[in-house]
Length: 420
Image (cartoon, rainbow, N blue to C red):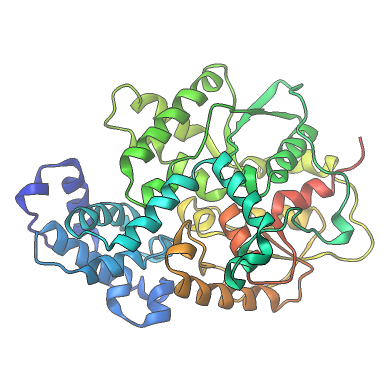
């Protein structure tokens, strides 16, 4: 795509990157059937190709309206278009640039600004989420039905056959060590996930260390175009993780695939900060979703897991967009679950977004709800006893739309650990 960038952006790092990405797009249209919002709305401006054209207009300083911001906001950032694109267009990077330009040029309405401000002030902070959640549970009977339905249970359910001892975090005892980045929302909403991961890793000979000074990975603020806050979060995490890296941990592990995709991008996002660039690059190289770490541990897992009980346990696995499109991990979790003796049920739309997409379910509830209903129908079609996923946002979103128990897939493996 030919571009004529405006003077205000032409010689900036963002302008040069955007120009390179724009020139790689050949308007082939392969992205259209992969895009959830285009499939829902049928409007080319709500497709990757249409949004690329609108970002081009922003970069060329052409007149734009608040409709431009609306179409950019409607994007889930699922990056399914990147998986479908034969030209390798880095759409997600271009969208970040376009959204920042739109935010600077097109002031939002006060109500929209307030909603985004509250998300920025609450969600990345574990203690605030925990306090707000406790208050909401106390006032549950007074909440509107829509909010009450989204309120997570205090003890997230598992099928009766998998309920047992609550997982604990073992003390470090192995030569092989990783550092587990716990995240911000997950410790408040589903603390057993990280404990189950640490327990599972311990049983296969890997000690999981806690990165106590870490917090939010910065993804939420990054997607809200609160880039200064996102960078501050990244720098804090780099400082907290670096002693572990210097001490020789073999990996930085995350159980939320969206967070893993963000930390894996620290090297690029902090490449222009001399005090952080090299450390951020090294941290990105070491970052793994837990599925990527366990993929090479088949023999140890087989020895640690108890034989499957009599009778199959039917599991529907929902692969988050961040896992399959951002990280490029496909089929790994399914293989691990099958090896552990679970029976995977088929899903007709495995590559389609569930509609969670970070803050999307809160900022775009109508579109998110439509995507959720479609996803739940597909997952429930095989009559699973449990739905498993790999990202806390997807997990909470799916729970709001189904009566089938929803958990992290690591919890399923940890529930199958042999005694010992």
